Every structure is written in C-alpha cells, then in structure tokens.
Length: 407
Image (tube, rainbow, N blue to C red; front, side, top):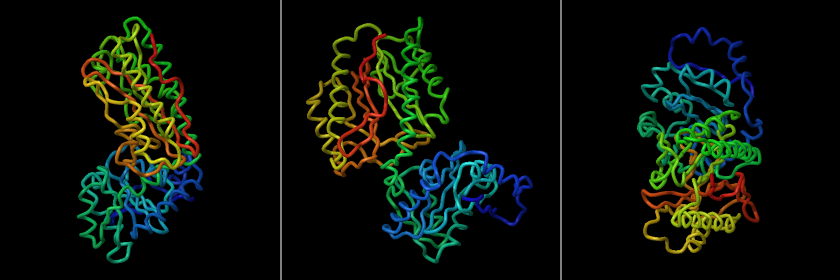
C-alpha cells in the first residue's frame, strides 16, 4: 500500500514539517510484522461480519483490534479510532501521532486534528466520518469493552448516524490465529522461557527478594524483545502468594514464590505461571501443586477442535473433585491470548474455557490455562502453559515442565 492520503480537520494550514518527502520517509521507517495479504485477509473477514450484522461502517476503538486490522500502534493512550467501511479504512489521530500512524499503519486515509483538540473529545472525528456515509448509516461500535467511549453513541446520533452494538465483532475474528500470528506467539514463548531461566537464577542468589526476581525476569523479557508485555511480571512470595494478584514489594523469598509473566513478539503474548520453592514444599503446597497439575492436564487432554468450551471446563472440574474448604480457585480453565495491549494480555472476546460457554473450539485458537490454587493468605502455587487448539488435540507453545522448581 502506498503512503495514505493525509487530511487535517479545520481550515488552518497543516504543519510545516509535514511535507510529502518527510511523510514518505517516515512511512518507510518501519517494517510491519505481517505481509499486506495478511491485513487484507483480516479486513475481508471483518467486512463479511459487518455485512452479516447489517452495518455500513465500523468504528474500532480497542487499540489491539486497531493494530490487528491496520498495524497501527503507539504509546499514546487517547482514543484514536479506526473507521472501516466496505472499501476504505480511515485512521483518526492527533497531529502528534502522525509519525506513528505513517510508520506503522496500513490504511487508505489518515485524518488528524490538533493534539489538544483530540484530548478534549471525539466530536470532530465522528462528524467527519458520518459526513462521508449515507444518511442514517448504521455504524457499528464494540460497546462491550471500556475502550469505546460511551459518548461516541451520543455523538454519532447527533451526527445523523444510527449506532449499533456489534458485540465483539473484531475480537471474535481474532480468536483464530493465522500461521503468521502463531509464529509470533512461538517467538514470544522463547522470551518467556528466558524469563523463567532468569527467575530461577536470580532466586538462587543470596539475599534474593521478590523485587530482584522481578527485575531479572523483566530484563530477560525485554533484552531481546521488540515489545513490552501488557502486564506483569507478577512475583508473590510466601504468604503474599496466597493473596491473588499480589506482586513484588521488596520481600525476601520465603517458602513458595508464585510467578506469572509473558514474553512478547510484536505484542503477541505467551504467558506462563511457575512456582519456585525454597526447600521442600509443605504438605499444603504439595496439594496445591497436585491440583494445578490436574487442572492443566485435564484441559490439555480434552481440548481439541469441535469440543465445546463448557465440556473442557466440566472435565477439569470432575478431575479436581471437591476442593478443600481453604483453597481459593477461580474455576476459569483458560482464556484466549494473542495480540494484546495494556492493561492486560487477556485482551479479546470473552471466550473462556468455563461453564456457560457452549461454543466449540476451533483449530488455531490459543489459550492460557491459569492453573493457580491458593490457601488464602498463606501460600500459592501456579503451574500453567499456553497452548494452541488443533484438529486432534492441543500443542503446548510455552517451554518447560509445569512443575514446582526447587531452588
């Protein structure tokens, strides 16, 4: 795709630095991680879904879904929507983000406004978008996620469009990863393995703390990576490991230490949970490890294309049996992972391996199994893997045995 058309809102002159030569040079500064054909395939799929939903256009606000469709990514967090129609894509950005848009995106048009105008609201962008559509156009919005500003509904109506909730339209397509995407997760898993190795080495140092282990993990994850993880690393030692979502705070390692983190490749994630043991684990910690192994094995042995998500969860529940009264478990046996932006790598449609989701698995779906069990306020054990669904079963993408690691 050539350099996109660039248009500014308002009557004033454009930035003097935005020359044709400068725009062309910036557009060539970075290589997108996927071929044009990959983006075209994604857009075709979304446009087919738009036609099924009966919408004329789709406004996408979720940063990871925008990157999925056109490649655009930036550290800026103000809403920067992508408009998809049957034939065109238009990216709306503040003028300060024109460089990132040119360097990373594959769109037909970039429309910009002043940076402070973008921070104040979306009105001008949505009005511009609706002006290019037919009167009363049905415009899809993914209202089930917090990245879509609620005010967008009112602004679209005021502009003469009919907003439609498209219910995770893009995210549902993202559930099945292409071969090119799977290659990114596999490369991410190599960084994850480096993080595990670094954690073990750091934990064996005299005077090791949860913070020093977290620092070693972060160094290993970022040292050879091209992108940061959307969350973590989580390092919770001793009693704090028994408090869900606690993390490092400068405490010396004691007993079991719960780890959770993900390596990345082009923002595709491969999470794992691992548990370090200083000395032989106690009886309760050995029980927690057994429960984690049981849950993980049940999922990996049951999941395959065509099996309902609820069936996978029910099989794992039966394998676990009734849990002891002091054990904390979330009864979530897997969630989809892949391309993700902050605040978390659990970034996509709510398509979980859990009771209540009777939809079938499809080959190419990738899940993380968060097999974490805790004695509340005492200790925690997590042993997990990231895997891909195949026609005949599962293939684990992360490395190393899901076993407690004795220091």
